[in-house]
Image 1 (spheres, rainbow, N blue to C red):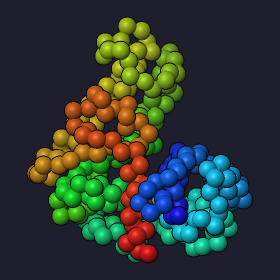
Image 2: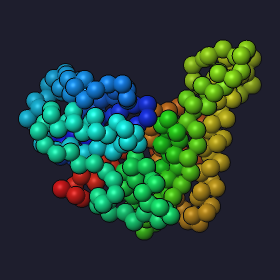
Image 3: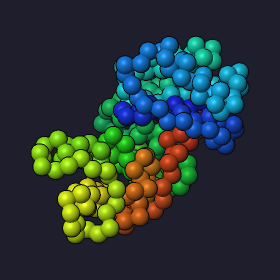
Image 4: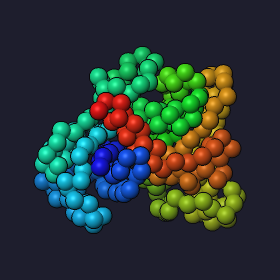
Length: 254
């Protein structure tokens, strides 16, 4: 089996592939306070819950946007499985030219998403990843990573609103019944959710116009399914897009 690990600012997502099939996935908090010993134990416990023997895991690959966290995870995986983990970064083969001014600045997760999207669509695409930040990544019809946009994530935007508006209560991020809120909570939810739909659709349309070609739009990340029903530009949601991209990159380097 192949273990794929996507380390984000808020959550770390792990997946286990048996060939092309994702057989298990886990989400844990990205906690910079935990040690490699703690993650080692946590990883083995997750495998035990899934009924997986550690000897079944033959290879691993990691993509991370939290550099201080990398060594902790790498050490935990190395101790758990006694093999060297592959880390997505400069020098690794992705099969995708990166046209950023400085390719080293591009987050590993953005490239991984782009690889998975192009493999799936075989044409121009925009990937919208709803994470701590929301990223918009553009792929040309030739399979080139063109660049994109980064905006504050919904959770960050909502937390800033709660923190700086003293009279507004902290509320759940959820779709309200209508845009015209008739109480404070619904008014806030309308502003956050429908406002974010407008941000996503506006940015996707602008990016697509600059690409000057027909594009497919894929969304991923924790809040993608909240936004997709009201979006006019998102065509499909794939919550496992990043994990699939890691699998593909591992195969291109193994």
